[in-house]
Amino acid sequence: MVNPNNINHEGCGNRGADRQMPYESPYVEISGDNFRRSSINSVYEDRGSVNSFLEEAEIISNDDITTASNQMRKKLTSFFMNPIEKWKQRGRFPWKLCVQVVNIVLATIQVNLFGSHSFGYMQQHLDMTTAISRILLKDWNVDVAVYPPNGPYAVYTIPDFYDHIDNVIKKYTQIDSLAIGPFGYDNNDNNLTAMDFCISQYDGQVFAANHTIQVSDLPEERCVTIPPLYPSGDPQWENFSMSSFLEQSNHSLNFKTLINASLKLKLKTIFIKSLNKLDFPECYRLKLLVKYDNTEHDGQLVIKLTIRSTKFGCHVKSKIEDQGETIYYMLRQILNISVIIFCVISAILCARSLYAGYKLAKETYNFFKQYYQKEISFCELLDFIDFWYVNIIVSDIMLISGSLVKMQIEERSAEGSEYARCSILLGVGNLFIWIGILRYLGFFPKYNMLILTVKRALPNVLRFLVCAVLLFVGSCFCSWIVLSPYHIKFRTLSRTAECLFSIMNGDDMFATFALLDTRLNLIWWFSRLFLYAFLVVFIYIVVSLFISVIMDTFETIKHIYVYGAPPHTTVETFLASEPPPPVNPLSFSSENSVNSFIKFWDWLRNTWYVYRNRGRL
Image (tube, rainbow, N blue to C red; front, side, top):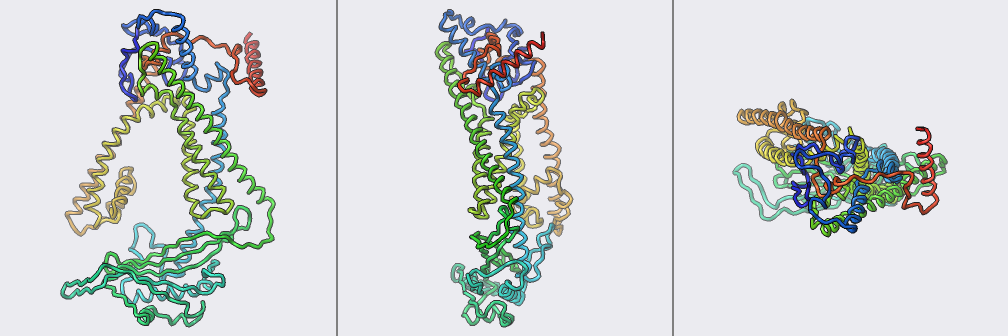
């Protein structure tokens, strides 16, 4: 006999994993015909049959205890049924499953539509940045961003610096007539706006001849405003010189102590698009910053153009009306509202199930404590909380939030930066909702074996990853501190981690070896030895051990499928003590038959069972 007080609990993640006794539990997570509740006649090897807690504890049976035990057993058996079993035996329709399927279809359609719209928005802004860079920056080319890079976009002499910044100012004063795109100046009259030139430098001198540096104070930033001396497009701008302007303004540039210089410009632009409800024109204020970076003082001024855009309302006067586009726009809004409604329904149903599990866990705890003086452990109480529901609730919340932001974007009441936030909310929410489908695949034995393998292997995988991460972090620091001066892929710690992770997956290994600066033989030999050792350890040892951890768990799950598993928790042992009473669907009376729809469903279900039984006769 089995006493609940003598059960050995081995933790939340590995309970009863080392027992070889051929006993099938009615509470085993594996679903299928091999693990039905008919396992009550199974026996331990040398301990007799599992009959009852009452017999083992030598408690004198009475009507109250028997009635309470039967009621609790009925509640627990019903709670741990999957939706298919509840439908077959109790007639409870799987509403959450149907809502989840509909929600997946709607959310996936929504993500696909928004993904194409978001890509168009980001690509448009990227193309705009490329166009402005080609117009303002002298000799700028897209090839400066290729890999491996040929070097930064920079100037190396003082005349080149002044020539470059003069070219930026001249092109800026002509951009409304020079550019193909609809660019204008940031004012109502489209007149040329003032420009700000700022410099940050040390107040001192550098004498390279005698290796002397004289610095009197911390670096300071000074700005000078370049007024619109002439109208935009005026030929007199061709004679403008930044060097002369700084001399007239009593400002000077000391390139030996210069930290950075920047030129600030302001523009406006309009994305016309197709003038329909979905591609309505968008207007943006653009703040341009051309920065000349001399932080490293290595003989080059690295040039970078950054653009910050701010959306504002457009004044559109159009006679174009497309009824089809308007209908399409309304359909997209209906889709957003439908996703929100179904997500709310799904979240309510899942929250209701979680609350029911919490109440049953509390009732079960009090039952065993009152009748058997047995306190159920926290790990066992976690079995009453279905974390699949938690995953679905999180996905519903993210999809609701993303849908609200998406509606604001389509109504043109949100900033362009909201695209990124909306993409994250909808993307992660869609990921979680697809992960939630695994719960329903677990009702089929073949899929359930794989899901249980992942679930059971997770604790060991996490422990293994802790050890692997320690090795990986150590390798990152070592390679970064040694190879960063000699290899572009090890310049920063984050880039080093990305490089090593790529190598670990067999990606771009030749380039990693080939791009190393080989002027020092010591570094060359160290890089070869380190990279080869890293490849051997992580590809042939760490990855192989990682796979073996999962395969070992898979073999354990297969053994349970063939030989079964003994009850290893108090609740399982309690359920195994007596077989559950048979349930006749025809005699089932729904607790929810309070409205006509449920009554109609009961009538349809009972008619089906009668028809099926007559067919068998």
